[in-house]
Length: 316
Ligand code: OXD
Image 1: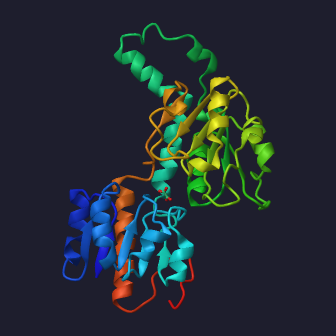
Image 2 (image 1 turned 180 degrees about the horizontal axis):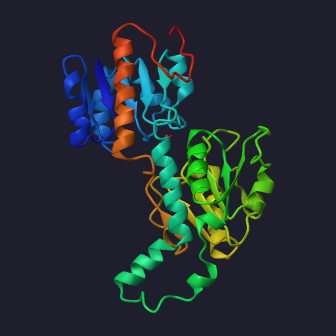
Image 3 (image 1 turned 135 degrees about the horizontal axis):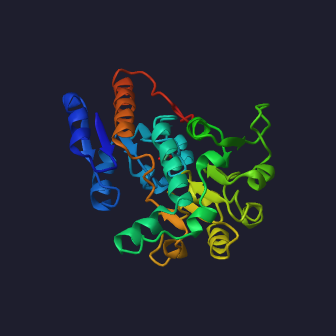
């Protein structure tokens, strides 16, 4: 079975798939290597997709393709409609990266709250002592905060367990009242939280969910963390709020455009901590991904339907 794996493997990944070499012919291709991608695409039966968008035009060139398997949860980077029309299954891996993304979100909360980048620079530059007295006036413990989770799936529930163990009060919101004591309508949650963390897929309903008006509901001393999708937040309004002191800090793993342009104002703000959409990317998540990815190929090889399919492909 021919697999186009759209990422660069490390040695552990290669060791993991080595025992399958008699039936799984994996062609590895870096996400920015379009020459190799378009050379391999026509023969691929399965694509292991990470984040490089897979357009309708790409799918139309993939004449043997049966399955696009997203290594992760969000399928917004795949033209699912075209895949469906062409009888190509699209599957994902709900929950597989939840432990890593949840810890990544808490990492960004702590880094933003405790001003980790500024302290790291100051220490390296010999400006760490005496300590800035503003730390003792403004820096908070997570355990003393109210944490508001927007979205309440696998990842948010893990974040809840971690920060609750640290002593935080945890609220959450989702479209409908779920009857749980922590549920609040979105605007109420925004006004009540010291830390707000986003855990939603990108859909027509969630695009720009945190627009200018909703960002204005946040407390000026609040911290916003986004490990879900950049387009859920109005980035221009976010930059203005961070610049104008209407929001204390942000921890961002995702951006409206990835990678962000070199002149993006976000890259210049001292009250923002940034990572390049890697909160999912750990050896533990990679292992979980490979187990599911190989298992789905085995299902196809054995004439069974793929697992975790999110569309209803024509003729599947
Ligand atoms: C995902 C991601 O969609 O890693 O799971 O961003």
